[in-house]
Length: 268
Image (tube, rainbow, N blue to C red; front, side, top):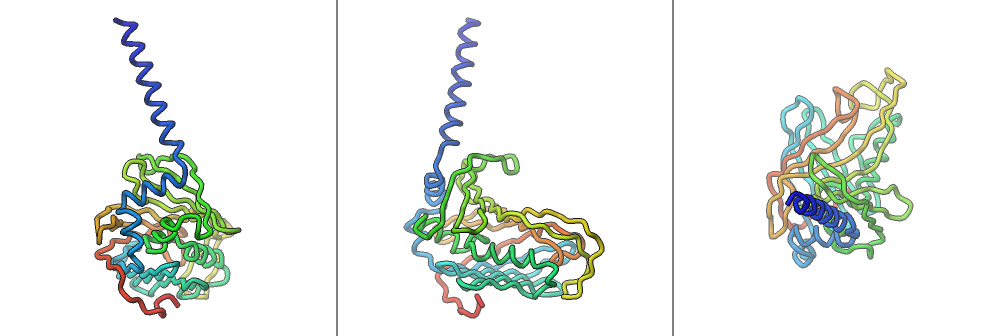
């Protein structure tokens, strides 16, 4: 009886290992297809041509500000944050990325990073992300599975996304629900600076900080037949933050709307 129990334990362990190995061996296409199915299916997603997300955003110890995110296929996106002292605007019209208000040339790496993020089509839960995933590699993007990683104690499939010579980015999909829960946009190195959100910035240290840019999403609910996140956490840096060099802001989506006409000026 003792030996039988040991054999059963070994078989269970081997079975668990096989199951884990099968999950880890999913291809990028299989992970993306599972995600598309989990959020509502390709047929539903392909009917959506634009998306408007309205909500609030919290930065440091300020009161909540207004948030509006507009997106339109194939790759137009606009995010508007209304903070206490200024409005932060990120826009991409398919050709040019805009970061407003303009900041010091000393912080060009931040501007460049956000331009890359906007042009990638992978920023926020925009309609452009859904479009790229439904269209697959026909859009010129290459997808490659990178195994499973832990994210806040839960397993997530990692899919690397690369277009042309641009920097590779990574999408994370919860291993159970297949919801999109994070995007890694790569790193940037920022010298530690202090000052206001103006072009008059004085350097107070030569130290450098390497920053991992990412957005994480949660609180998924069904809207128009599609599961969408109603919470996100986004890494931001000085000068958007005033109290430290790098940190996060938290966004809460109050409502989504689809297939509304969006003024082209919103992306310019």
